[in-house]
Image (cartoon, rainbow, N blue to C red; front, side):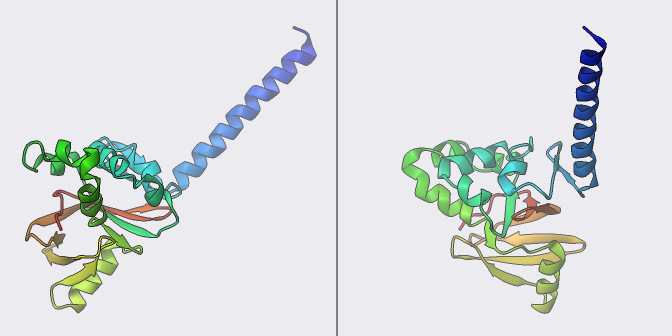
Length: 189
């Protein structure tokens, strides 16, 4: 290899390191939140982040089975109350397997859209609504029914139509098209 070729190769290697460093530096500058062992980047959409969480494999599979991927990749904004795999494991045995069957797509879609609010609501905004509502705030889901938000100590909770309560375990996971609040129980309309 002649000297000119070596210089060209070295320049290309240097540029590739500089470019990758620039991308990494940009991503490092973002305020990320760790969910399921993965950094959630505010510059990525809900689906782009959720697929990396080890704690949300069941939710991602259910979203795919319901055909909601494109919706949650859309502009939004959305507030997603994201149950963990452990939350899905609390359901009666066989529930998830039954829900992801093609013949149950409408029911699955109803349950999943019950976990989505139209608009971006930070934990601070929800707390303010609870305070203004004398200890509770009702919010309409994309599915059409309401969820009741309430607080206990420093924790934010959500009550579903069946009377089950979910605790927000990780709040304010910002996305390019909304926000995710991780919850410990699957909500049922």
